[in-house]
Amino acid sequence: MLGVASERAVESAVENVPRLFHFRKQPVGHIWQPYDDAERAATGCYGAKTYFFSAVVINPYETIFASPPSQVSPKGGFADFGWLRKEEVCEKVSDKHLSDYLGHLLC
Image 1 (tube, rainbow, N blue to C red):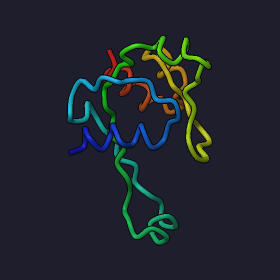
Image 2 (image 1 turned 90 degrees about the horizontal axis):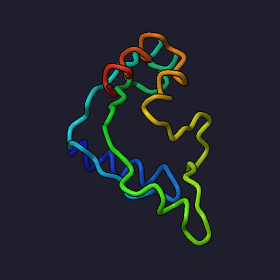
Image 3 (image 1 turned 90 degrees about the vertical axis):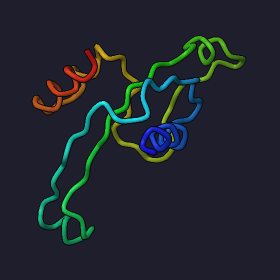
């Protein structure tokens, strides 16, 4: 179920989605983010889990050489969005522990 949800999440969050191949229907990893007291009181939740799924773009040239060319871009008001190669992920993540964890997941 999480694999199908990840595919829907990409389609609902990104415009001009290229065709993706998801290697697995289960996540390759996750992180737990506990909420502080104020956020816990506001949401009624103790924290959130972020799941990571492995996928590749089947044909990146479909969007680049389309007529007219299309750019992968976020839908909605994302403040921090990136379509990254695995080499770029660790450079963009500011949290050292998360960066190391993602480096192990993607290698």
